[in-house]
Length: 114
Image (cartoon, rainbow, N blue to C red; front, top):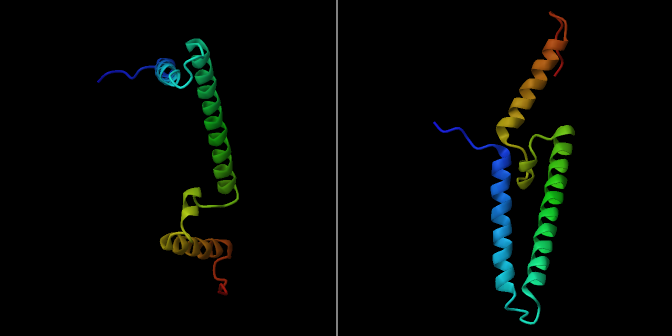
């Protein structure tokens, strides 16, 4: 089995692919403004790619922060926001855990009021 490439090699490949796609888009976009020099079009397309990347990073940070806050406040899973309620099996497991915790908290021989 082949050893996977290091992270720095992977990041370099991604950066190279993004810059080549940016250059391709810039060359194609230069046809929209024929009087503008190609270097300026490539500069603007590079700036646009950097801005889009920054927006992607900000969106990822915000969404992960919200997901983490939900989990810290006792939420089951942020993905369940798409549904109206928690899964029925989970509700039953929580009820069972609550009863089990109440039984463990009571001294032996003491009846539990439900």
